[in-house]
Length: 340
Length: 220
Image (cartoon, rainbow over all chains, first blue to last red):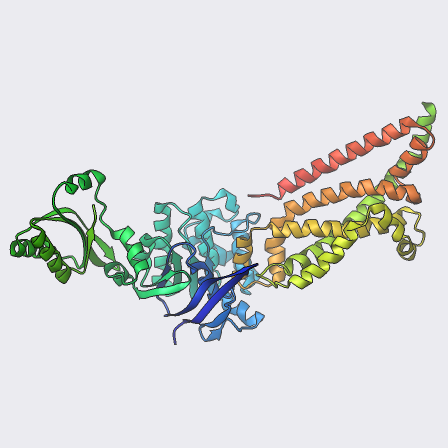
């Protein structure tokens, strides 16, 4: 049995006249110690779904089982116990503004029944873990966004959780700070083997952190795959949209304008592995008699595996160009004809 | 003029003491019980705790019903209750009864608002730790709402100060009574002016202290 089992969960919000289905018949299994991502545009139901895992949101139908405990039907006491083993990290940090950093963490410790006299040591240890040992007596208002999120992580880790739920934990931070937070979480996952469920619309995070990923659209999970395959070979329209925006080749308008005057076709190519596409390009060019110009090329690494991204312009006789495109489609993982 | 001074010398001290007694006792009763009702209203209206609209609506109805009484009417209606609780309704303690009954629902609504204004995300984070409501109240809701609760307390005290003048007119004493009895009925304009000046000063000082205290507890 998986550590987290989401079984046919739906959440419906009734708003006066209409009912909005925020989450629609979602089933997911999340394994121990993996980093499981849920991506999608805002409003896709990601945040609502993750809240069903620790019972902050009650499903309208379906149920969630965490470590064998049915969260959806758990008694108040059982639910509180389960929550102590699930840390939650928020987009807006959600620290108590009128209490010090130490008091904020002490709150979580007290909630978990941690002995009062040992709390000071534990707070030091937790703040050391996130690199904020000297900010004990500061108030959240005195910290930067990244530091607040570190406190958020320390609070979430207070009771040695088995699971960390992260709701857009890096979305309110600048790129550099977001990367730091991702590194901390990655480190926590690797060293403490804590399962992480991470919700985001930022594919940058998905690329750096996720093992597996589910893609959500309009409350439904439209695709479930490994992080690598999401980028290398997105199946659903939503994944293609998300990944497309992230991995696509961006040809400057000036170049597009020039190319428009030349007969031919611009292609966006993606392929697995580090090998160069040169031999394939040369072969196709020779066989079909077209010219292939490489406009752009780069390699992205996802889970230490490479994905090559290329933009090529194919010129020549119409029929030859069509033939070349067919050959590219047969030999390259992903080919998209770009209209200029 | 000398008569004015004489009246003030004889009566002002006691009148001030009676007003202080009425306002402070009913203010404290209002804050304590009002906070309890406020937290009750909040608890049953927040989906994170126990979303029961009918509980909130029922208690809310009672609160609104008491608040819709003009204070003068409430005071008269409560004379029998004041007799039971304080013995003689026409004393400062008797006046305190109706002032307290007015203050409780007044402060209950203010307190409910103060708790509702606490960032729902922060409350959600507190719930996510598995903490009990008692712990969340003590370490999250209360400290976050405290500045706003203090401002509400100041508002309540100032309203009570006004109402206390009214209970004064039916014989409960206080500076209001002094102003009416001597200043108005006996055409002692001097007494009236002195009382008004004192009230203005009290209100200013209470407001100033309240603001100081509220900002002292704000760390954001």
